[in-house]
Amino acid sequence: MKCGLVAADGAVLHRETRPTPRVVVDARGGGRAVLEALLETVVELGQKAAADGHRVRAVGVVVPGIINAESGIVSAENLAWAGTPVLAELKAAIGDQHVVLAHDVRAGGYAELRQGALIGTTNSLFLPLGTGIAAAMVVDGSLVSGDGYAGELGHTRFVNGEAAELCACGQWGCLETVASAAALARRYGVRSGRVVDGAREVLELLAQGDPDAEAVWKEALAALVDALVMYTTLVAPTRIAIGGGLVGAGETLLAPLREGVAARLTFQRKPEIVAAVLGEEAGCLGAALMAWDSITDESGEQTV
Image (tube, rainbow, N blue to C red; front, top):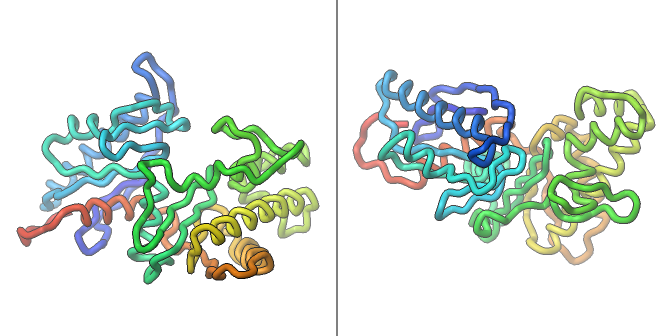
């Protein structure tokens, strides 16, 4: 878990990373240990803010999954949350404080829009390629939530026939099964019979000319180009910012995406395809910016 204290101008006053507990499904219906660690973190950060002479004006929390903005109920398979009342639990833990609960990727996109690679755009896309794949969609100047369901580009089918694999979502052939960082490492292992230490090692092998690494990389690129062409045709972004662990590949990733998308477009507006700039802090910073933007500070006090 990444967390911190952020001032109204976006300055990070304190940052830290805490381990996420192992997900355990318990009798109360989900990953209780993860939720309790989240609540503990929020409470302790509030205590630190007070000790440092700050007044907490709002709390921003972002999580993966499907989030009901009105009820604050979250369903997130990788956290073993099924209808978990996260917002209610947060308010019970911290009392009468303003809380913003949002999706982690949309928060990352919000940060990139405010302070990163998407500054100045009104139609754009933030697409982090990490353990999974989801997107933050900026359309006509607004970040699209779709009642908590929007942006799941990773769970759109781009692989067909015998090559399609079963996704964690229950569908076959999802983009996430071939083009996420986790998929890259898994598919390399299946193809080569060799266990690798994540996508980073696959990229190292790719640079060394390993044929299996080249094969899984080309399959990932092909699916990503399909996804970006589809998105460009439907929503017409002027800029696409690629983030997540795979963007560490730099132009090895970005150049073929640009070339592949440009080759496929006919009448569509061609987007810039760039690297996101905020890295692993995007979601945390986005949570803080969302929280700040949801309130108006008229007191002049030092606040976070």
